[in-house]
Length: 106
Image 1: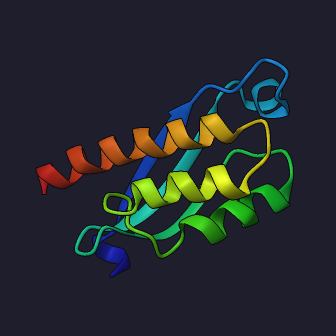
Image 2 (image 1 turned 30 degrees about the vertical axis):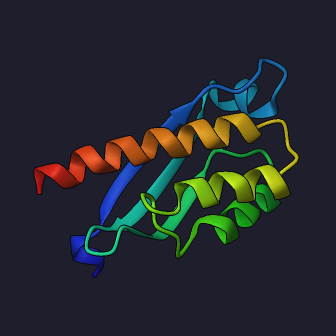
């Protein structure tokens, strides 16, 4: 499965006071996705605390980058109360668009 997976990067801006903006300048989420099922195999994101990444991974891994977008957004709105919430949602949507474009090329 890994040989067929796609690597997709989503990007978004965070507010100027956010530690992620100060460290990285932007917020990035990277996804490894199985194009046969659209499921997220693995993911990482720019973060200032390791717990942030682990928490977000629990929400995303195993979900569909296409069909589960509304569910993922609701889950983030319900559970994530960090200053990067809007950036995570925007980055996820950006990655989903890039994924669909990449998948269309296969």
